[in-house]
Length: 184
Image (cartoon, rainbow, N blue to C red):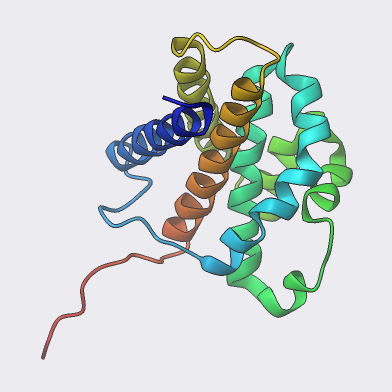
């Protein structure tokens, strides 16, 4: 198996694990919501996140992974709230980070953007941490040599799936339940 195939299989494993876990937790329905507008911005968000995320990964891998899930949640919220306004913005990630700084991205997204308080905020933060820990465990289980192109590819794939999971989880929380239409 070549490196690209390995990374692709790894990304699918992460996606499947996150979806199943979030469905068991009741944070996603059987049909996962999608949002092409937010998905299209993944490359731009990832490029701006990588310097911070990669720098923090060695000391704080769960934070480095989890913050991207929070960014996906914020992007879904922006899409639902006023996409015309927010889609014209550049530097989505930097704007979020600069509100309170990288270390407090969880509070920025959960409290300031999404408006969760007290126990609800703790539950969301805990769920994001659980997801990031699961993904870190999958990364560790693969025994990927650090500093290689495969390691970078898997890190980016993990971030991508966390971004999409955050987006889907927030869309679900906002009431986007993908259910079949009933014929009357």
